[in-house]
Length: 385
Image (cartoon, rainbow, N blue to C red):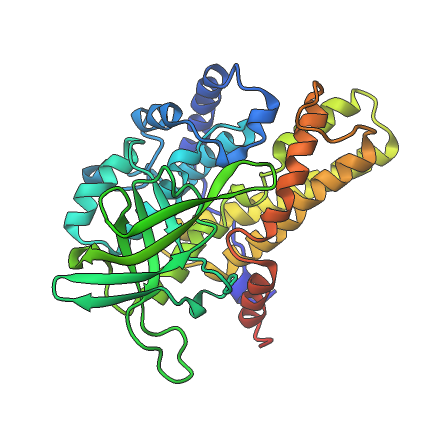
C-alpha cells in the first residue's frame, strides 16, 4: 500500500479503556427506555438534555484546552466516547457537528475572542453548529461553490444558497464556506473563505426544511440574501478556506460514525437469528464482523494521527468510502437472512429497524462526500490521476 495510505496502530491508551467502563455504566441508565427504533437514528438522534448531560461529564470538546472548557484528554479517549455512544444508539445529534468538526476548526483557526466566546458553550452541550458547504447543482464538488461574500466596510455581504444543511433549524451557528475572491485561471481552490455565522441574530438568512424520504426533518436549505456578517466573523485568513475545509473533512470522514450507522440493525439481526443461526447466517455475520473490525482499526489509526497533529485527509477519505459500503450492505444482508417485511411501524424491533435503515441507507454514500469524489481523492493519493 502507498505510504499515503499507511494505517499505523495508535499508541496504547489505558485511560481510554477505563473511560469505556464509565461510559457503559452511564449509557445503561441514560438509555434504558430508548427503543431499538430510536437507537437506529445513530448520530442524527437529537436530545438537548442528553447533550447537556454529556457536557456536564466533560465528554464534549474533551481534547480541547481546559481554558476553553475542554478536558485536555487524548483523541483516543474521545474515540472511545464516540464509538460507545454510537454503538448504544445515543441521541448525540444536537452537539455532534460542533464537537466533531466546528469546534476543532475554531480551535485551530479562530481568533482568541472566537475561542473564548464559543468553545466553552460547545463543551457544555449548549451551543450547536451546522456546516454550510453543499450547494444546488454542485454535489460534492466544493470548489464550484457560488455563494459569495463581498467586503463592505466592517462587514461582508453574503448572497447564495446552501442545501442538505443538517440541523440548521436548531443550530446556533453555521460555519459557512464561500467565495470571497475570484478564482485564478486553473486555480479553482483559490478565493475561498470560511465564516462563523450567527444564525439567530443575522438578518437576511432564511432556513427552509428539506424532508427526508421518511418525512423526517434533518436537512435544510439555507438562503442568504444580502446577509451582513461582521468582519470578525471571518474564520482564519481570507482566501485560506480551501486548506481549512479540507483539514476539517479529516474529522468528518474518519470517525466510527462512518461504519456504525447500521449497527443497531446488525444487533437486531443477530437477535432475530437466535442462538442457532444457519450456516449461511454464520458466514454472513462473520464476514460483516471482520469488515467492521478492520474499519475500526483503520479509524482508530486516523485518531492516532490526529493525536499526533497530522492531517490524515487521504486516510479519512478511504475510511469513509469503505465504511459506507459496509453500512449499505448490512440492510441488504439482513433482508436475505430474515423473512420479515421492513416496516418502521411494525411491532417487531427487527422489522422496524430494518425499515428505518433501508430508507436511510442511500444517504450513507452521499453525506460527507460522494463515493465518486472520495475515490478521486484516493486515486490522487495513489498517484493514479
